[in-house]
Image 1 (cartoon, one colour):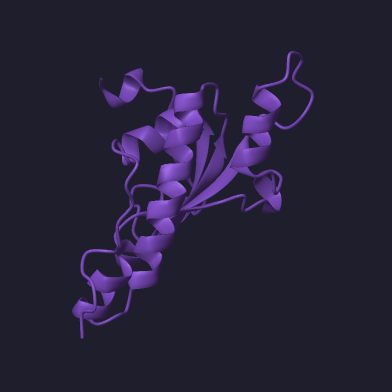
Image 2 (cartoon, rainbow, N blue to C red):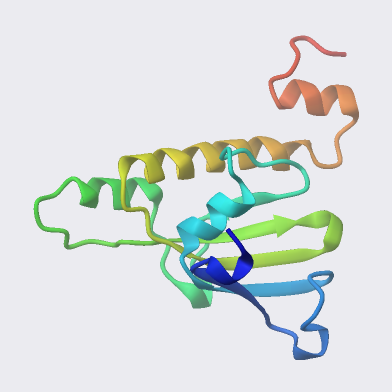
Length: 143
Protein backbone atom coordinates (compact mmCIF):
# COMPACT_ATOMS: atom_id res chain seq x y z
CA UNK A 1 0.00 0.00 0.00
CA UNK A 2 1.41 3.40 -0.94
CA UNK A 3 0.86 6.52 1.12
CA UNK A 4 -1.60 7.76 -1.52
CA UNK A 5 -3.74 4.63 -0.97
CA UNK A 6 -4.15 5.33 2.73
CA UNK A 7 -7.36 6.67 4.20
CA UNK A 8 -5.48 9.06 6.49
CA UNK A 9 -2.87 11.82 6.47
CA UNK A 10 -0.95 13.80 9.06
CA UNK A 11 -1.08 17.61 8.77
CA UNK A 12 1.59 19.72 10.45
CA UNK A 13 0.13 22.45 12.66
CA UNK A 14 3.20 24.62 12.02
CA UNK A 15 3.12 25.83 8.39
CA UNK A 16 6.75 26.97 8.54
CA UNK A 17 7.76 23.40 9.41
CA UNK A 18 5.32 21.61 7.08
CA UNK A 19 7.91 19.33 5.49
CA UNK A 20 9.39 17.96 8.73
CA UNK A 21 8.02 15.91 11.63
CA UNK A 22 10.80 17.10 13.96
CA UNK A 23 9.58 19.50 16.66
CA UNK A 24 6.02 19.17 15.40
CA UNK A 25 2.41 18.68 16.36
CA UNK A 26 0.58 16.72 13.67
CA UNK A 27 -3.21 16.47 13.30
CA UNK A 28 -4.75 13.36 11.82
CA UNK A 29 -7.16 13.66 8.95
CA UNK A 30 -8.91 10.45 7.99
CA UNK A 31 -9.11 6.96 9.46
CA UNK A 32 -7.58 6.84 12.95
CA UNK A 33 -7.66 3.04 13.23
CA UNK A 34 -5.73 2.72 9.98
CA UNK A 35 -3.20 5.33 11.10
CA UNK A 36 -2.59 3.58 14.44
CA UNK A 37 -2.29 0.17 12.76
CA UNK A 38 0.22 1.66 10.29
CA UNK A 39 2.37 3.07 13.12
CA UNK A 40 1.96 0.08 15.45
CA UNK A 41 1.34 -3.00 13.25
CA UNK A 42 1.62 -5.43 16.18
CA UNK A 43 -0.10 -3.15 18.68
CA UNK A 44 3.15 -2.69 20.59
CA UNK A 45 4.50 0.69 21.69
CA UNK A 46 8.14 1.47 22.51
CA UNK A 47 10.12 4.28 24.06
CA UNK A 48 10.26 5.82 20.55
CA UNK A 49 6.50 5.74 19.87
CA UNK A 50 3.75 5.49 22.47
CA UNK A 51 0.08 6.48 22.68
CA UNK A 52 -2.15 8.07 25.29
CA UNK A 53 -5.89 7.48 24.87
CA UNK A 54 -8.98 9.46 25.89
CA UNK A 55 -6.99 12.69 25.71
CA UNK A 56 -9.96 14.88 24.74
CA UNK A 57 -9.04 18.50 24.41
CA UNK A 58 -9.93 20.31 21.22
CA UNK A 59 -10.16 17.12 19.18
CA UNK A 60 -12.84 15.05 20.90
CA UNK A 61 -14.15 13.60 24.15
CA UNK A 62 -12.77 11.77 27.17
CA UNK A 63 -14.54 8.60 26.00
CA UNK A 64 -12.80 5.39 27.08
CA UNK A 65 -12.14 2.38 24.88
CA UNK A 66 -14.38 0.40 27.22
CA UNK A 67 -17.33 2.80 26.69
CA UNK A 68 -17.11 2.38 22.92
CA UNK A 69 -16.88 -1.39 23.33
CA UNK A 70 -19.93 -1.45 25.59
CA UNK A 71 -21.91 0.63 23.08
CA UNK A 72 -20.82 -1.66 20.21
CA UNK A 73 -22.61 -4.53 21.94
CA UNK A 74 -25.98 -2.77 21.92
CA UNK A 75 -28.54 -3.48 19.19
CA UNK A 76 -28.87 0.24 18.50
CA UNK A 77 -25.76 2.29 19.09
CA UNK A 78 -26.43 5.49 20.93
CA UNK A 79 -23.18 6.28 22.67
CA UNK A 80 -19.72 7.40 21.64
CA UNK A 81 -18.13 5.87 18.56
CA UNK A 82 -14.60 7.18 18.74
CA UNK A 83 -11.66 7.49 21.11
CA UNK A 84 -9.21 10.38 21.09
CA UNK A 85 -5.49 9.64 21.11
CA UNK A 86 -2.12 11.36 21.23
CA UNK A 87 0.98 9.62 19.84
CA UNK A 88 4.14 10.73 21.60
CA UNK A 89 7.49 10.48 19.80
CA UNK A 90 9.99 11.90 22.32
CA UNK A 91 13.21 11.43 20.33
CA UNK A 92 12.02 13.63 17.47
CA UNK A 93 9.91 15.90 19.71
CA UNK A 94 6.71 15.12 17.84
CA UNK A 95 3.12 14.65 18.93
CA UNK A 96 0.35 13.33 16.69
CA UNK A 97 -3.29 13.52 17.65
CA UNK A 98 -6.62 12.37 16.31
CA UNK A 99 -9.57 10.08 16.86
CA UNK A 100 -10.01 6.39 16.15
CA UNK A 101 -13.34 4.66 15.62
CA UNK A 102 -13.09 0.99 16.54
CA UNK A 103 -15.59 -1.05 14.52
CA UNK A 104 -14.83 -4.63 15.53
CA UNK A 105 -13.85 -6.59 18.65
CA UNK A 106 -10.39 -6.95 17.04
CA UNK A 107 -10.09 -3.14 16.91
CA UNK A 108 -10.99 -2.96 20.62
CA UNK A 109 -8.39 -5.63 21.49
CA UNK A 110 -5.77 -3.80 19.39
CA UNK A 111 -6.42 -0.47 21.18
CA UNK A 112 -6.29 -2.08 24.63
CA UNK A 113 -3.04 -3.87 23.79
CA UNK A 114 -1.55 -0.63 22.45
CA UNK A 115 -2.67 1.28 25.56
CA UNK A 116 -1.09 -1.29 27.91
CA UNK A 117 2.19 -1.46 25.99
CA UNK A 118 2.31 2.35 25.80
CA UNK A 119 1.99 2.71 29.56
CA UNK A 120 4.81 0.19 30.04
CA UNK A 121 7.00 1.93 27.45
CA UNK A 122 6.44 5.42 28.87
CA UNK A 123 7.30 4.20 32.38
CA UNK A 124 10.77 3.13 31.19
CA UNK A 125 11.82 6.44 29.62
CA UNK A 126 14.68 7.96 31.59
CA UNK A 127 15.18 4.86 33.72
CA UNK A 128 18.48 2.95 34.00
CA UNK A 129 18.52 -0.01 31.59
CA UNK A 130 18.09 -2.68 34.30
CA UNK A 131 15.24 -0.83 35.97
CA UNK A 132 13.55 -0.16 32.61
CA UNK A 133 13.77 -3.85 31.68
CA UNK A 134 12.24 -4.83 35.03
CA UNK A 135 9.40 -2.30 34.61
CA UNK A 136 8.75 -3.60 31.09
CA UNK A 137 8.43 -7.10 32.54
CA UNK A 138 11.57 -8.38 30.84
CA UNK A 139 13.29 -9.47 34.00
CA UNK A 140 12.54 -10.31 37.57
CA UNK A 141 14.40 -8.94 40.55
CA UNK A 142 16.79 -7.02 38.34
CA UNK A 143 19.13 -4.90 40.52
